[in-house]
Each structure stands twice: as C-alpha cells, then as structure tokens.
Length: 269
Image (cartoon, rainbow, N blue to C red):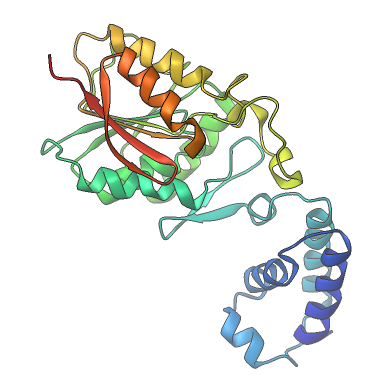
C-alpha cells in the first residue's frame, strides 16, 4: 500500500468516527511510523508502506477512532518545542500552558530561584522551566504516584537535576521563589469532549466552580512564613475574576494576565 492510498483510507475511517482533525492525525501517525517529515511524505505519495508498518498504523487508527488522545497513542506530545512523554495517567500538556513559561522568563527572579511546580503531571512545566532557566532549582509535586512516574521518565529523558515529591498541593511552609500551578480547574458539571474524557479526571475537574484546588493552595500560601515572589496559575478566563478574589484574600494581587494565565505577587504591607 502506498502513502497516498493509506492516507485516503485512514482519513475516511477517522472522519467516519467523527474525528475533526482526521487528515492531520493521519499525517502525524505516518510521520512517526515512517520516520519522515510531512513534506517528504506529501512529495512522495507512491512511497510503499510495508505490511508490518501497515499493521502498526491500523492499530493506531483503531485507537484513534475511539477518540483516544493522539498524544497517548504516540506516547508523547510537543510542549515548548520539546517532546514530552505522556500516558493515560497524566493530562496532555496544552499549548496555552506555554504562556506560564513565557511569563516566568520575564519575571524579576533571583539569580538562583527555587521554582515549585504544583500538580506537575508529566512534569512538562517544571522541566521546561529548568531547561529555560538552568540556574533555577525546581521541585515537582503531585498527589498521584503514577503521574510522578511519568514525570520521572521525563526528568531522565532530559537529564535534568529535579526533585519530584508525592504531595497533596504544597508541603507545609514550603520555601520557594515561584509557584507554578496548573491545577485542575474545569467545573464538575462542565461538558468535555470525548478525547478529554480519556484523560484522568483527577487532573481535570476542580469542584463545583473549578477552583477548589486553588482555594486550598492559597490558604496554604497564606500560612507560610515566607511567601513566594510569584505565583503563576492557569484557569478559564471566566474564572479569573474569582481567582483574583481568592488570591487577594490570601495576600496576593494580580500583576499580569495573558489568555488562561495569571501572575500574582504578594501585596506589600
């Protein structure tokens, strides 16, 4: 079977299953399998796909027809220009979360900042922070042991010196300069798409209004003897006003906001 024939049949199969990104998904899977980029594949439509490769590809297409996230099928996802390992135990990192790294890189940080990534999942945010700011000390925290195992794989993949700790949000009186918190923020009654339904509920839903985890975290931060200089959070834009209120009650004010991301700093007394 040629590349052209396989793309046609695979695309039809995914479209029949209601996959809106059928063509793109097929090209991504084909790139991975044949180890060729998209330009090469489209320039050589008569390239033959051998039987073993076909069998592998059709198994992946079958998984995708069930609306399993493409990242889980591939076992990886790109985040901030790097491929991170993912599986069903972690949320798939989203492009909107990259803004956290952009804001972090523009923050007025100490020469050797300590950054804590709360609810790290795959570790994509914390590891990227370390790679972009090599002088930083980074700690990854998550309540799920299986998620921390994925984070550990990514730590090893990128050969970074990062601690990873099992923790329900922040340990008592954590000393750090920056808190990165992409916590579950989807309201419990919110309808999510079929692909997201395959991701861990623990990493998605955050209570009736989606902000329960942030409430708990800011209560923790309020009790700390030394508050972090910066807190970077992610939530739905319509939740931002309420999150500003929650942060304000804990002694933090909004200093920057972009898309899904908010930056808070301590209110000067």
